[in-house]
Image 1 (cartoon, rainbow, N blue to C red):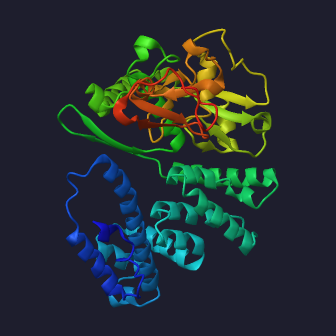
Image 2: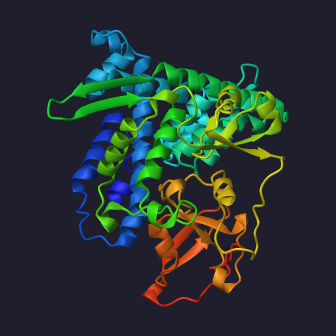
Image 3: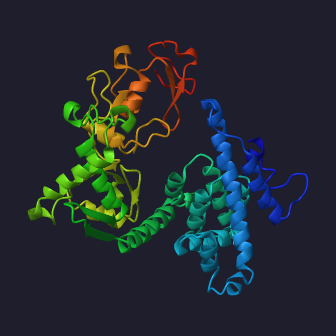
Length: 446
């Protein structure tokens, strides 16, 4: 197993290996790898990151090979038109996937040296590299080579802590690294969103097939905004404890293994109910559900500036103002009058206004790595109410039902990170814990 994870089989350290020998050594290492059954959780935890790093290094080698092949007569020798056609045939992938690979290989070879080096070292993934390639291609044409290099380096650095989706969101405003004027940065981000929304609408599709057994199978592609609306509706209709506890107190999700629920089936039933109860007399009226949009007064008044929605995505200024015409949008106006979000010891439960405000900070459960939607979470006091905690926005921690139980489980310690996420670790020996403990990172009362 060690030989598989050691970068040496891929990039020789003591001597330079030829391409054939390099690839052959990878196969030899895999053939010689021992079984993984029986590994402890600690060993699995240590190995999985190294396996991912080895995979990234191998993908980097593949991209370098594709870039080299594109400079040869490999396509004409194979009797095809393009390098993408050749790659699709040789690797049994789709034409679209092959074209993306060829494009990324060219970008890394031509204009993204820092990204290529990071991928070679396994410090970023191919998905991160693709995001960086797209983001840097959107930079203003007049930007200097030095500024472009600075932007690329910042994105590479952020790739070490963000997943590709988070990096894509961050990249829309990465121009601010070299552009001091926020108006220019706002306009650049808005232009990207307008283009993205236009391309998304052009890809919209819906197909339905009658299965002749009482069911219909469908497939659809819609813009992200429409998908967010549908997801929120279905989440509200299938939230596990919605009916019993109410939206503000708890909309907690339980994993299939914990509750035995078939979520795909329940969403399917909810979708069927939704379709059969659509108010057809109001199809051109109110939006079907509520989206929480963060904006300032200038955006709503007509400024070219993007706004954020509570699913974590961004909307162009034009789309934001269009949505503002319907009552399905709740604007959280920065700098405007608002309902009180710090209630201190006046009440124990968080208010609806606080829940909505929390949606501008979180899109999922606060537990690190948990993807349970915010709409399904329960609002937990960072410092327990029974120990003097306050019902203030900064003390609100959204947790799914699984992690809400875990935060009260004495067998686990938890730490609130600086970005607001919560990390859990199992206590050695599983002993009892104190009622609450102040975090060493500052300010987390357990």
